[in-house]
Length: 210
Image (cartoon, rainbow, N blue to C red; front, side, top):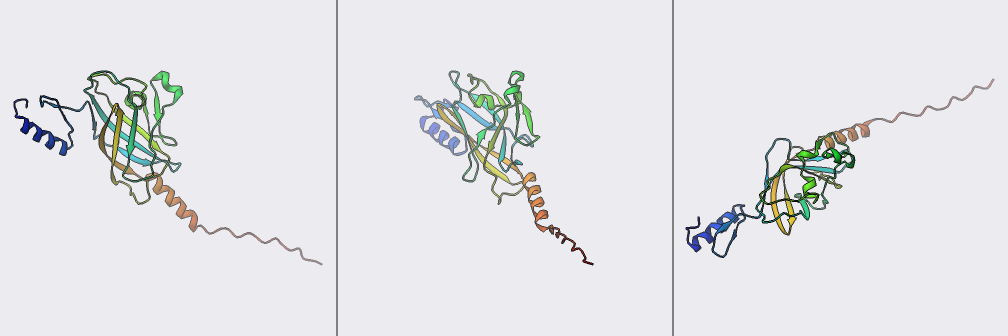
């Protein structure tokens, strides 16, 4: 690619950017990859948005990172934006009692849980450094106090934007499957309870006078 003329390289850069592959150009017009590459790993059942029993929502992303950074860095922050407004998604904290054993992450009120060795939250919460040429892969677990909107159906597909702040912003889109089984069950229970006929209170017996 270095043999291309400057104009052709510029045209190639524009083409790559328009097709979702951000690149940079050095002064000699060499095409460089981004310093931090973020890619979704399309593992079944590992990329999803789901309801929690409390009415909150949870997000599970399977991600691959590739560092082209020149020095070790700590990630300064992470942002996950769903396709609706009003959310405040934050990374799930691990169980402090399990940190000496490598960590353990469980969504509140859910059986969905993973050992810390397969979860990237510690890295994204700046507990360790991302070194040059590191290529960690793992799960990102996040929660939102706000529910998934009612007009989003079970098994819908949504796009969320993951942004990592590390001196600069590095972003990637993730396609998630929506799991609404918890909310569907809750609605069915609410409907059944609304149709139940309340029991009539028995009138007290009036004693018969002689």
